[in-house]
Image (cartoon, rainbow, N blue to C red; front, side, top):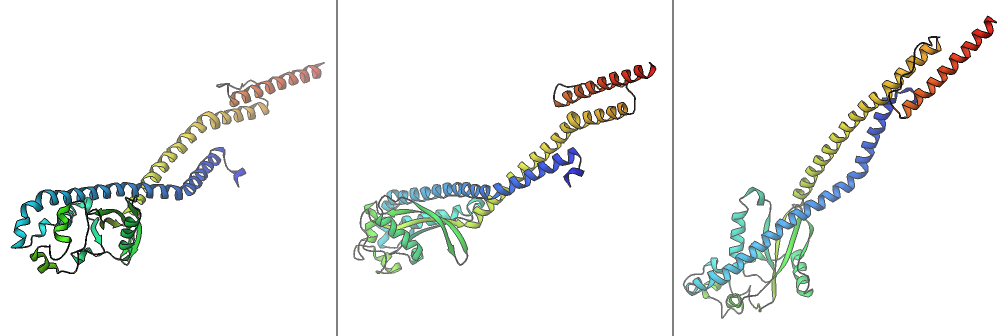
Length: 299
């Protein structure tokens, strides 16, 4: 089939094949790379959120709790609880579109508020933090009934003695807190003990969607550039190869019919120019042969 096509068509088909094969072979690698880049970008934002929540916890313990602790005997104020402050600030932050899909949880196996109770997956990660003292961060994907999510987690330890005033024993805890949450959960904590794990998560589909958008953008850009290259190659091929070959063919046809007055014009020193030189030598040899024939005929 190719032998019946013109030179320009052959080059165009070759370039299109290169485009299709190149895009197909690099598609999987590009998809994996872009997904990893999207994961790294979102993980960076998640870590920033965890650092922000940690700062809010410390601010609550250092500045809010001392100011309000004396009022706890009259009424329990959840604002003195660092976990409550972090959770409330995060919910306010989620009202912004760029953080709407993020979720925050301080998962504990023995929480005061049962909404922070760790499930089996979170409990396993918390246990890893307790056993592997050098482990400072865990991230990855997990499957839930609602779909796959990406998570990032860090250990949360008791670093302030003020925390033990509410979490050491039920006897030392504010009575108003006992009345609200009971005397069963959230006690027996010790200083520097890892009691919870901070989790920031979001649907994995957001990462895939972001990577997919980047893939389409890059593929579209590369395809557009390649199409421009094909057009430029065709223009160059037409001017530098096809048109000179057509001129050589036309002159060769005239010479073959006996019009020896026409001449091959050399416009370049490349392979086309060498071909013109060869045709000139052929034409010169033909003229000399014709002269000998005429001379021999006349004699």
